Length: 438
Ligand code: UGA
Image 1 (cartoon, rainbow, N blue to C red):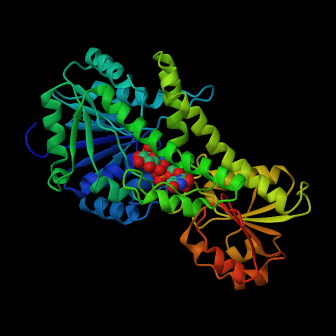
Image 2: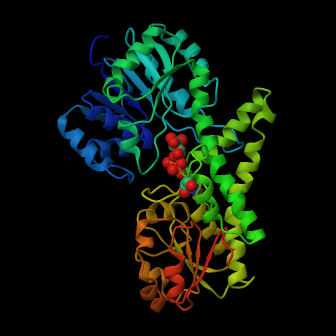
Image 3: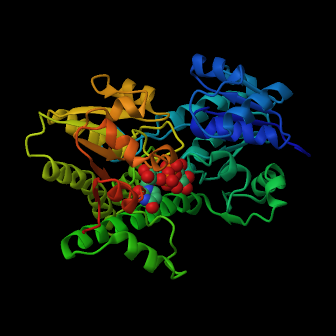
């Protein structure tokens, strides 16, 4: 294979488009393959089909170099050395398990074109055992090739930074040769002293779901403490700060509020439970059921506060919802707690109007019956209540006295514990937050 292997990226969604552009920026020739012709056309023009800070400029820049190309044609990978599988593994329609259709068809799609010595590298999040199964299949259809696993830990909103400066690289391999190839590919990152962990295939798959399960657990832990604070008359934000100073606990991911959403954490913990059950180890991760339940309860608790603040019957009220995406700096509305709450309130008969800096179009696509507003002023106009559900910096910068002149009723619920309570209260607002009694 020699120096500077050429790369392909199969699946050019969130993960794949980021990986392709970043690897190109490290100097590699990269071919991105996706079955969606519209996506391929956009990416080829250097346009990003979704919002991710910094990735738009990086993509445009890499397209110009000529190193980065996109196609719908699998045969284009025939001369390529290393193939990253970056397709999605969503939750199945009928169960908690992950849907592996796309991963299987990606590997099957490239198999006929793999050259001698090619390495297929899975990056998608998959149930443990998937890589071994795919490798066994590949050995039948393309014995000249090998398969490794290399989980991805990037966060939306920080995708470029996390790809180019990862806090660790994990490779699941079955041969020294596969590890050597991956070391060649990640040489520029290894030069930054990035920790390198070689594992077997199963462990590499597990590292990813273990990490996401831990993060989900941390968030649900603090949301459970928020419930206790509400019951006992405490303040979860003070509690989180105080326990976070213990370095064994750490202060990150202790932000109490309406909980986690997105395309990863919720479906990953569910897929993990489903897989553990198949493996006969159901009880080991039974606690994840509770993590999921605490998380979903946080959404319900906001609705309870709304009913408490307004009335059990919401039909007479306008509720302004600030935030639709599952977190700031993203246009992703998959399993968004904010949107979920908005949908519930709308279904309960409230006049719900939603604002989001980036997520209105994707949210409208999912829920065409909801009402959206392009400006904060229009969203909050004559509102009986404001719900702050995604902590965009735009919302932290709001002046409560100016907003106070637009609404009917100066009442706000901070679902993310991100607004300055004293500032809002001193402007005459009734301010509620999850996990903070006053
Ligand atoms: C998550 C992981 O953090 C990444 O490491 C992983 O690579 C990625 O999933 C993946 O599997 O691909 P992401 O989904 O981008 O990344 O979002 P996070 O930053 O983890 O946030 C997830 C959710 O938790 C958001 O809804 C956020 O609002 C919520 N959250 C986060 C809290 O409610 N409290 C916190 O303290 C932190």
